[in-house]
Amino acid sequence: MADHASGLRTIRPVAYQETDNRFRIVNDANGMGRALMEHCDPADPAYQQAAGSCIAFAGGRVTPQQARAEFIQALTSAGVFVREG
Image (cartoon, rainbow, N blue to C red):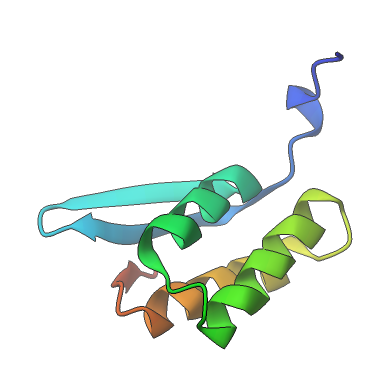
């Protein structure tokens, strides 16, 4: 299997509060997917939209800006604090 690291699709980093005293920063579809699974309710339409967007983003069918915005919306909908900066 070829190494596709050089072609990894990234977004502008997003910092979100993982625990009371720790933030995590994600900047790619894998990190966004893990965060969605850990912090969001799969029944939430915002989660469903963001999850689909992450998959589409990884496949090059969604812009980084759209994937990032939908990811932030899903975390916010789940009550997770996102630090914008």
